[in-house]
Length: 122
Image (cartoon, rainbow, N blue to C red):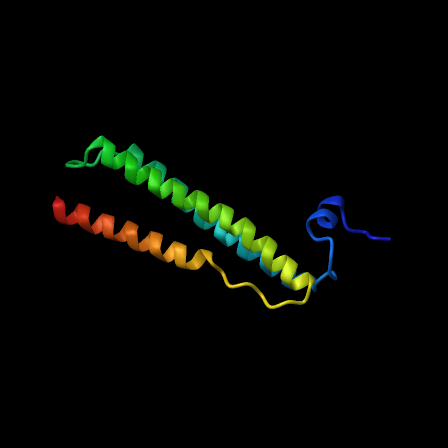
C-alpha cells in the first residue's frame, strides 16, 4: 500500500521516497528562495510608498513594478526548482542546474545600477 498522499502520488508518481534529510534540505532551500521573493516584494512596495525627490511618479512606479515582478518570478522559480529537485532525487537522477540564479544576479545588477544612477542624478 502506498502511504503517500494523493498530492505526492499525483506530482511524483515515479521513483522511490528519498532520504527525509534531503527532502527537508530541498524544502529549506525553497523557503529561502521564498524569503528572497518576499524581500523583493517588500522592497517594491517600499520603493513605491516613499516619495523620492527628483524622481517622477512614472519612473518610481516603473521601478517598483520591476522589483515586484522580480519577486514574483523568484517565487515561481522557487516552486519549479523545488519540484524539479524533488523529482530528480526520487528518480535518482543528477540535480538540475538552478536557472533562477543567473536571473537573480542580472536583476540585482539592474537594481544596483538603477540605484547608482539615482544617487548620481541627485
